[in-house]
Length: 199
Image (tube, rainbow, N blue to C red; front, side, top):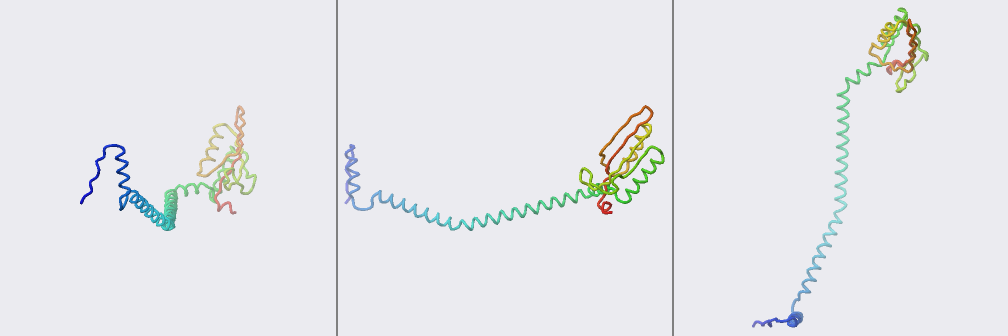
């Protein structure tokens, strides 16, 4: 036999119906809500403990991946540098050949002797007598030249000094202009290679 629910017509009737529902034996809505909320809390608590327990493993995996990434980056950087050195080895060899060795020094000294014989170079010397460091920090021999003569002869002599494929770093240039001649004093560094500098 079914119970007939009273027809609800007013606010008082609603309050009475709710009161009757709460008094009925069985499961109430509040109990169902409490059980559902507690069930969700238990599930969230279990998930939290699971993730907290798994956290050291996740951290280790992240650390391993980061280490692998750094190692891969270092390998790539080393390969790029190696490729760059290989690509530029011709330029490096060309630049190294510009530093004067024994043969280059003999040729330079012969040129200075020839210019002195021609009368354009009045003085030529190596004041330090041994290697020193140029301003850029390279091994070098300091030398001094005094050119004298008509401007065209001095210019030609200077071109001949600077023509060989060698590195010269000027330090002091003094110029005296007379009506009939030009006098130029040049103090400079002749950059030498490591083998020559070891002598």
